[in-house]
Amino acid sequence: MLRSLFSGISGLRAHQTMLDVTGNNIANVNTTGFKASQAQFQDTLSQVLSNAGGPQEGVGGTNPAQVGLGVRVAGITTNFQQGAAQLTNRSTDMMISGDGFFVVGKGNEQFFSRAGAFDFDATGQLVTPDGALVQGWAAAADGTIDVNGPLTDIRLPIATLMGASETRAATFEGNLPSDAVLGTVLNRQIEVHAPDGTASSLNLAFTKTATGWDVAATRDGAAVGAGTVTFDASGALTAGGTLTAGPVTVQLGTLTGYAGLTTVEASSQDGRSAGTLQSFMINADGTLLGSFSNGLKQPLGRVALATFTNPAGLEKAGGSLYRTTVNSGDAQVGAAGTGGRGALSGGTLEMSNVDLSAEFTSLIIAQRGFQANSRVITTSDEMLQELVNLKR
Image 1: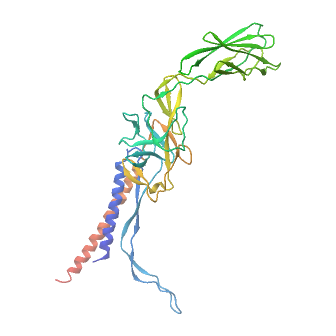
Image 2 (image 1 turned 180 degrees about the horizontal axis):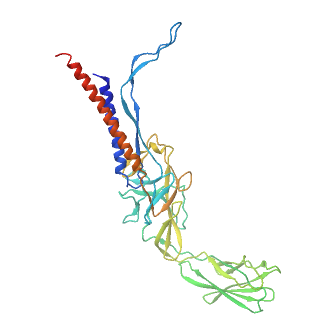
Image 3 (image 1 turned 45 degrees about the horizontal axis):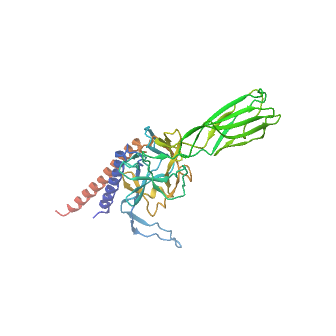
């Protein structure tokens, strides 16, 4: 049989595969986080009709004569170019701007995905649309996150509590006027908390003296401490940088004593009452920052990202998921924005990177290639028909 028949058949198969790949790309033009693929061809083995001959005395060399035996699909590569951003304003939607994959667990297997359309299930677990669990690092009770620890499933139950904390330090800042009349009293208050979160008022009464200011601390009307602050001629503090008011250490070290200004105020304290989780947002580093009913914010966890030496070596596992292969390299897991990993954007999804104009062009190329190879088969058949007709 003619070699051209089999070459034409291989061309039909290769272009059919190209058509399949292109059709899949077009079908996923609106799939979140989808990455387009492209078929690559290469020729198959060539049959040698005559070998090459080296030059000899009086005779020149000859080139080999070979007839190709067709084409085959060399590979189907995935294009991991960044897709466009789609604003959704849903707090659970996330987009990776740059390199990296979300890490998700499904059963006992770990997968990776670029699709950040997540949601919470009935137990507060952050999941993909098909139920895979998004992984990262949970925050400790004080809000610290150990990104070097093992990965866990991200979980934010509605009943998440921020525990109460006793006030141990408070800070007052500003200026005490050096030209104030002797006996002038300035009262300043700050809300502090007991170990169980009960709030009370800590009052500092600053009384002008001939040498500086006397400070008397009271808590809910009961005296809890006293001290003195003094300043030099330039208004710099010379004594009384701290005041012990019961269990609270009051920092006064930044006070100044310039004339004509009365700006002393309470600036901060480290206690808090208990609070329940109201809402959350995501930072660019993947940190889930919770807002609590006590008016404070605290990290709740951090979403992990993974990068690969050869992301094109990942195997598509369906459901917009990938799994590792021997040629992708091991997953290098870390926080967003570190180690070459991209940043995360909340309330945004990454759209498919399929370029419809390029895909429709590929459709035409695949169609014409298929037609051309079918014409080779038709022509070869006509030649065989002529050969058969030699014997009538």
